[in-house]
Length: 224
Image 1 (cartoon, rainbow, N blue to C red):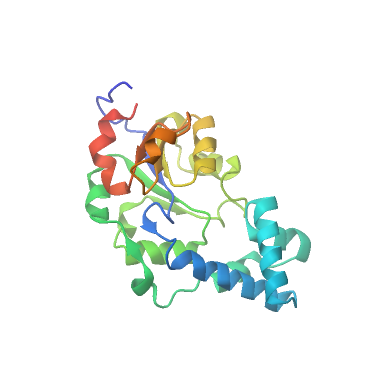
Image 2: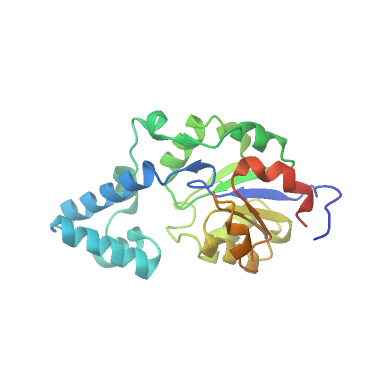
């Protein structure tokens, strides 16, 4: 792959949040899932088992539970997202990437966060990680009119709003479906896997594979 001699002024890094800038699998995702089930159970008057099954059905069909709740139950998305993403003990459950701030600081170009999470949660996580000041914008599901990644709508809206050319963007993500969309739009793609063996099974739309964001600096000049 050709070497980049210099970073174009219009270039940008676009980072996912959960399981990209921090590990959400151990503590945070299980709590969000429980909170979503409890919300559905309470507001739709269902048993825990039925609420959990419905949550999974909507997630598989629409890519996000909230879309099914909006379409079929007229749920207020802001109310749902607020009550299912509460972490008063965030510092105690957050698993940060080692040397995260230093790694991000060394990357040239503008940086953005693009997450399917709600804005209040995303901003709280970035503050807790002490990296909130490094990003030009935090683009969340509210900004995409509740059309989550991998829908192209949010990608294109982010690019238009900040005058970004997709071909000058590098998408850094743990989710392959989201990286596929980014690649179709012309972005360079970096798959954050958390694994040393994933490189051998990376699909063709992945340009580079890293175990963590902390490894980005070492391979920056190998991204075309």
